[in-house]
Length: 82
Image 1: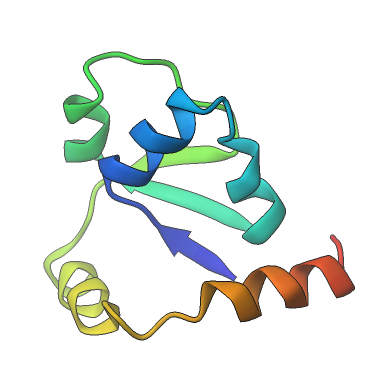
Image 2: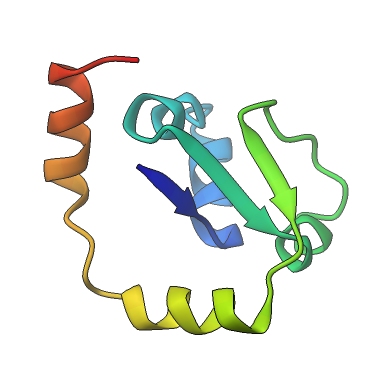
């Protein structure tokens, strides 16, 4: 599964030196350009890719909020590694 992240989980996981958890749970992690700006130049691991969020993409992300079962996603990824 691909995922789009805002800055809060990246900041939190970065402070814990645990950004690799995202790579374990998701095929790819994308962050909008605004998130990269908010992180004020902090380097991101190569598996986190910045991109420009389209208006349609933003609507999709907003519609998906609160619908993800991260425990199920991580469990599925551990059973079927890349």
